[in-house]
Image 1: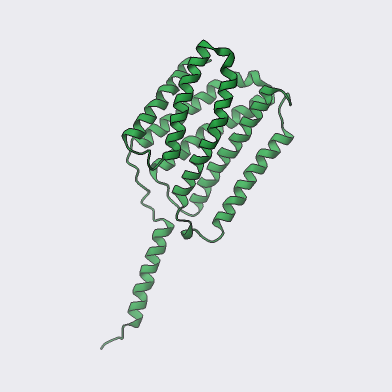
Image 2: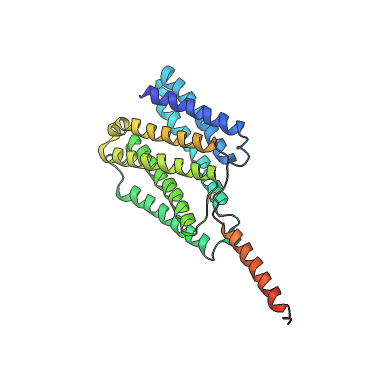
Length: 248
């Protein structure tokens, strides 16, 4: 176990949680704050368990990972809302397109589980790796789809929301790579690649620390709502001009 990286990540997690609370950013990013708070407690507890009751480590670690899933879903929903609300300003059919894109990500995850079940189907460790890969496909795909849709429609992200999305996409993409390689070559390979996965999470934590240390200001690019208001104002001025009789 790479203890140095593990302990460093624990300090980074607690530091990030402290920064979020100090900046009073937890109200706007409640789901992300809950996720970081849980992960901070989880990492500290797992370090203690690995040291003193290692026989329980595997079970407790993966149980905690299952608990993390609904927290990740809440973070994803909060990011989507922060980027795309109010939905009434979106072009017609955008939400339907997003649902179809997300359904495609789920289909890819299911197909990967069915057609590439790993080196030892039925084995507990293999099953755990397969579930981890499926979760990585779903979440990294969902974050990527959100980024693509917002980029296509020219919708700017608030600075901290953007940082959260970048951090998640970074470490989940690496986690997807690690779990896929582990399924291909066995659990022992996964243990060997653990350091890469942990370092990617370190980079994600540093990314979040950087973004939360700065003021949360949106991009100067106009949102669709602002464009709509501007267009209504221009139309109103045009109507007034046309209704005013010309004088010589």
